[in-house]
Every structure is written in C-alpha cells, then in structure tokens.
Length: 375
Ligand code: NAD
Ligand code: DAU
Image 1 (cartoon, rainbow, N blue to C red):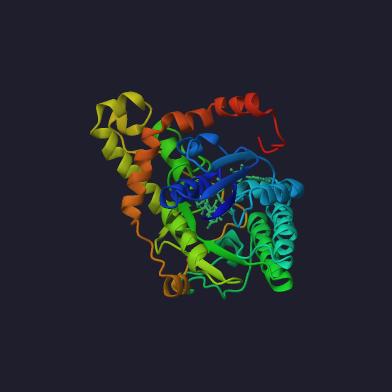
Image 2: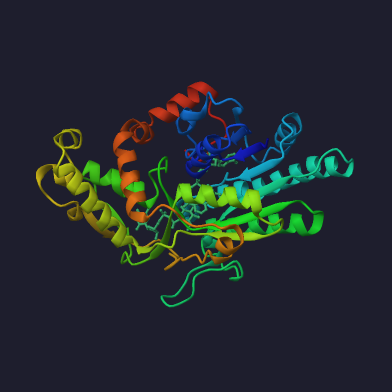
C-alpha cells in the first residue's frame, strides 16, 4: 500500500490524478496538500472526499515545517508534485508568485523530503521513497515548423517567466538526486485538456465564451501549435513512471496530436454548433450562443494582440516513455474533446460559480482569505 502526498491536488491535473488514483488503487492512502489559490477548487475533489484513505489539507508547499510534519505523521512514501502557478499569461503580468511557488515551493518540498526520508534511510528505518515532479514541455522552448519534437535530451530554453520557473524547479529536482541521492523522477508533458480545467486556458475559455456569445480571442495569427494530451492519458503516464520509472530519470509524456490554435477553435465552434442546433434545451439554456439563433460560432472569432514571447510550436517525442514504460496515449483527440465538451455542458454550475465569484466567497467563509494574492 502506498502512502501518497499529492501537492496541488485541487487543481486541474492534480484533481484528475486523485480521481484516477483512487479508482485504480483504492487501497492506497492519499493526502492532498493545496493552498487553494484562485485555481484550486474543492469542488474538483467532491467525488473522492468520502473515499477511505483520502484527506485534504489546506496548506502551502513553501511551508517546510508543515510538509515535514505531514511526511512524518502519515509515513508518506510517495510525493506527486503538481502544485504550481500554471498560467503563462499570468506569469507575464506578475512573475513573482511563479518564482515563489514554482521554484521556492519546489525547493521547500525537496528539503522536507530530504530531511525526513534521508533521515529515515540513514537510520535504517525505511526505504523506498519517490518524489515525482510534474513539469512541462515549455522548458524546452519553441520549435520551428520542421524541427524534430522535444526529447528528454533537448536543451532547456524556457521563454516565459512560467517556463523559466518550471525549468529552475526541474534542475533543483535533478540536483537533489545527484547530490543527496533523493529518489526522484520528472515528467515533462504537453498541453493537457479535460474536465476541471480552469476557464482561463484555451479550450475551456473558448467553450464557455461560445456558450455566452462572447468574442473568442485568438492571439496573433492563431497558427501557434500545441500538442494536445488528454489529462487521463497524462495520469496513466505518471502511474507508469511511479511503477516502473528509474530514479533520476526524466520522461516525456505527449498526446501525438499537434494542432494550431485556430484549428482547435474551429473544431470547438463546429461541435457546439451542431450540438446546440439539435437540442432545444441547450438553445434555451444558452440563448446568447450564435447557434441558438441559427448562426455559426465562428462569427465570434476575434484576432487580438499576440502574447509577448509567444512560443510558436511545441511537440513531444514520447518514444523513451513508450519504449521503457509501455506508455501509449489511449484517448483520441476527437473522443477526448467531445467528452470534455459534454463535461462542461453537464457541469455548468461548476464553471458559473468560478465566473461569478460565488465559489471564492464560499472558500473565504470556510477558510478565511489564506495567502492567496492571485485573486
Ligand atoms: P492548476 O493551476 O490548475 O492547479 C495548480 C494547483 O496548485 C491549484 O490547486 C493551486 O491551488 C495549487 N497551488 C498553487 N500554489 C500552491 C502553493 N504554494 N502551495 C500549495 N498549493 C498550491 O495547474 P494544472 O494545470 O493542474 O497543472 C498542474 C501541474 O502540471 C503544474 O506543475 C504545471 O506546471 C504542470 N503542467 C500543466 C500542463 C497543462 O496543460 N495544464 C501541462 C504540462 C505541465
Ligand atoms: O505546454 C504545456 C503548457 O500548456 C503547460 O505547462 C501550462 O501550464 C498550460 O497552461 C499550457 O500553456 P499554454 O500557454 O500552451 O496554454 P494556454 O491554454 O494558455 O494557451 C494555449 C494556446 O492558445 C497558446 O498558443 C496561446 C493561445 N491562446 C490562449 C488563450 C487563453 C489564445 O490564442 N487565446 C486565448 O485566449
């Protein structure tokens, strides 16, 4: 039985991972540590809150004493580290929080793991720990149209403050393995999509704007390319790394689905237009959506000023993870996107409570303001 600490487990990927793990490993104990920034949402964990062995702690990864206490009291043997500031646009407008959480926070976790786990190891009490660090393909920089996809050997060239902060955290994780012998693995993955994604990221933002009849802001010429990965395939990749990954190694996880932003937006418009045109209830629920009055949602497409330093293309070469661990993305983009669209249609209350601020009000009533300066 594993005793796992999941940082950032109330965020998009972390929450999906918690659902995935409790479904596939119901015997394990799982503690989520999350400070509930604007991106953390307890509603994301509603489905697992009564799961035996699951518990939630609101706390900051920068609080080393708290993390040490959790590791000791719960005899944690595995850390899966998702907690981060994750949105590139926010990092451009305010990098400080990215440096604090992504670099200092990761370092604080590493220090806690070193303190508790290496102490246990040297006193012969326990063996078999794993610190898994979840990172991004953005650390590798931007590709030209004909460049080969990123491998684990691609030199780092982060371009945004977000990517630079993730790159720094990757280096710290690597250094703690080489210097102190901490048992670590790192995964660098491409753009995730799926349920519970905060509506500031491309896919949920566009979906919700189509439903509300609001403009769809396309940065620059819309021809930037991302490699899309369903969040469940990402979780499956992390599971394989935890089970079979070699300590000190880095594994790339991708979805083999390169698309331009404008292609994605046009697909979303067409899927929603067809859905709404054939469903009277949806037309009543979303009267401002163009399809409710027989128009095409592409009429909402609006080209806007480009993101500063906008990376042109990302693509992951997952062949090492495939060959060594048997990883294979299983969810086609077509199915994954349809399911995601259905999730957002069926969970309107989830995104409405984020957009109208009622969710944050509730969190403040439950916990006070905390130290969330990003609201
Ligand atoms: P997210 O922004 O949805 O969630 C981040 C979570 O971390 C939130 O629950 C937030 O409350 C929590 N958090 C933030 N600061 C914290 C702190 N100081 N202490 C404790 N908790 C804190 O992010 P996501 O999209 O789920 O990304 C998760 C991880 O995956 C990140 O490390 C990100 O860099 C990485 N990643 C994301 C993607 C993607 O497409 N979303 C792709 C590659 C890698
Ligand atoms: O590649 C992995 C990364 O993917 C993760 O490390 C990040 O945490 C995650 O946020 C994501 O970063 P991106 O910047 O690629 O994701 P985002 O959804 O913000 O944007 C995707 C693309 O869409 C990007 O080229 C910018 C563009 N875009 C985005 C928004 C929000 C638009 O054109 N309009 C928009 O309104």
